[in-house]
Amino acid sequence: MSSQHLLGWQMRMARVCWWFYFSKVIELTDTVFFILRKKNNQLTFLHVYHHGTMIFNWWAGVKYVAGGQSFLIGLINSFVHVVMYMYYGLAALGPQMHKYLWWKHYLTSLQLLQFFIVTIHTAVNLYADCEFPDSMNIIVLGYAFSLIALFSNFYYQNYISKKTKMA
Image 1 (cartoon, rainbow, N blue to C red):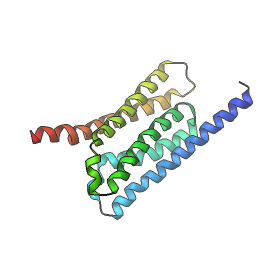
Image 2 (image 1 turned 90 degrees about the horizontal axis):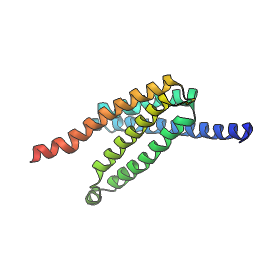
Image 3 (image 1 turned 45 degrees about the vertical axis):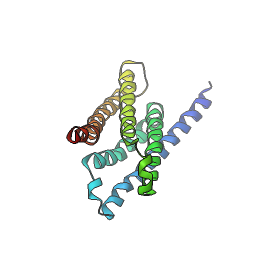
Image 4 (image 1 turned 180 degrees about the vertical axis):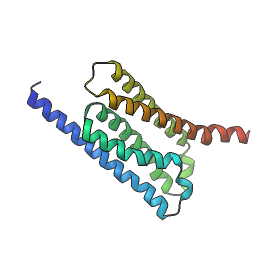
């Protein structure tokens, strides 16, 4: 592959990462809408932490390491968000759709799977000969661990603990 072709490929990946970052800015408006609609029950620590930190994480990712590993993380997260917003779109159609939304806990499982994939990929990058800076790998690893802890707690509180209380 010629260096000019490689540079073109890298620039396309960096551009995709920028658009992904921009999508995180749009997603942050969820929080604004929750506040404006006084939906304080949806303003959990998990929601605010995740949406608030993604802006800064992706700003740093686009500014310093767009492409490569950042591209993979954005690709996986985009897939998860397509499924997630499909769920929310169906839920927004009204109560008659609720019987079709039995798969909500699988959505949380998919989110957790995403964080485990990112964790494994990032850990491998720390030990492989990878051009992605170790400092950024460590930051991504720490952030992925924090999301695993928070989303696991969400899963437990919403799907396991409630079943135990009902039994």
